[in-house]
Length: 596
Image 1 (cartoon, helix red, strand yellow):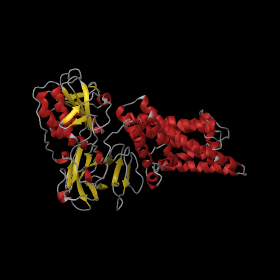
Image 2 (image 1 turned 90 degrees about the vertical axis):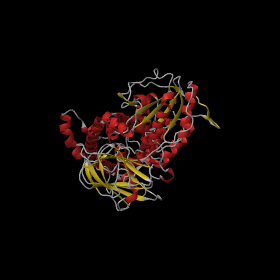
Image 3 (image 1 turned 30 degrees about the vertical axis):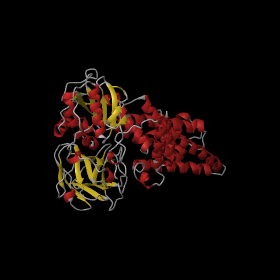
Image 4 (image 1 turned 60 degrees about the vertical axis):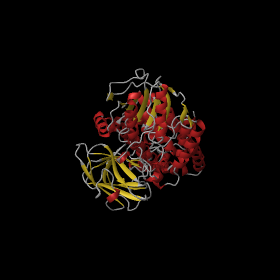
């Protein structure tokens, strides 16, 4: 219930954010007509269409994105015609003649006459819903991520509908106030006609803003009225009151490295005194394939202590926990522990079983791994994090869980206690001392002040271009001379998609102003699989001793496969630095920055 309230209030706040500006003229075009017959159908159509499109985009594949792009352009054309009919009534008359002959009545749809028509308003609302490029702030970002990972459901659609209804509420208030202004102006001779034409011009300006990408780019960055801080405060306040977890796709702190505590347990001086029963071990059915093992079942694992590790191979947090998970699997295997990795992909390339198999070989993973491409096991556990560890006893009951990195000693004591409860004669004591190298080395979180940053437009933040980010088309970008902390920019020819940006010409660059010891970037070669050469610079110089494991001291390196690349590991003091990577060959795919 609180999540519905949270989503609704988040939508209400959208009215103060600049990305709603291009939509406002479409709403105010119904000003001066009865609210019940004109304004309300428009807002309802807008809210319902947005909720439907957002639900499909969250759980669908690439075809939904393409369909929505075509739908947006058709809606743009439709609304542009509407704006022209308001601006030029004589043009409306000419347009209606052939359309009437074809069975359409644009004059009615576009409001060429003064009579309010609920059907016409609803149709305009549907078009507006297709054009509504929502501000992906904390609340909507969490809703869409939760929808993508938890799957299609009535709950998902209700949350998105609550968000849309919140925005519609704000717009309804603005529309009602605008109606009073319109009524006052109509008392002046000719004022109503000029106001109608002004609204038509404003609608055309809104269409131009959306067509040029201003609704998702410049407007969202030049405004001081961002809803991000307000929404984030709302998230914290309501989540704290309700006790519900807000769905997250990655761990909630800089560098996506969540050090959250695990399940509730009372600690004694020498380890855990009690481990509560959190529920039964959920079904492990639904994996598209099992690696290193035949399919395992919850029933077949009775009598064993089980550790289920949700991970994905390009996730830096998952990689840093692996040395401990592998060491536990080795140390306690003969004492009754079964470790199961559940690989739930974040990016499309992680759905490729061949990629996962190679990554497991490179990482030295020998325990069973379920390929959970459809998130069926993820949803059975009601999981929301990478990495996530669930500990089950020999009776098949979940007794403890931990999200994110850290608290390895406590987790190992849980394993030891569950093995003793299972009747293991001699449980190895002491704690493992995991040896981690390269990207798996523990982060210096005291120095991390930069967040995980996605390059694709679906979840991108802090992007600073000279012109707005242009989705799904080749565009020339120019990076500014200076960047503020955590801002980043593209330079050269790029095609920015929903989850990645693809360089389409040599000498294309990415620049990022960051503060952390380590900098990583998830990269992949071109579609032909040929390696892509790159050159890394830090503050305009070769990295030298600050080079990462995938970079030479002179800054050179190659993208040979789809994975996470460690580009910088700084010795000594950490300060704000400007990182740049230039791709000498075209075709590279860049997905996400992480830090440590």
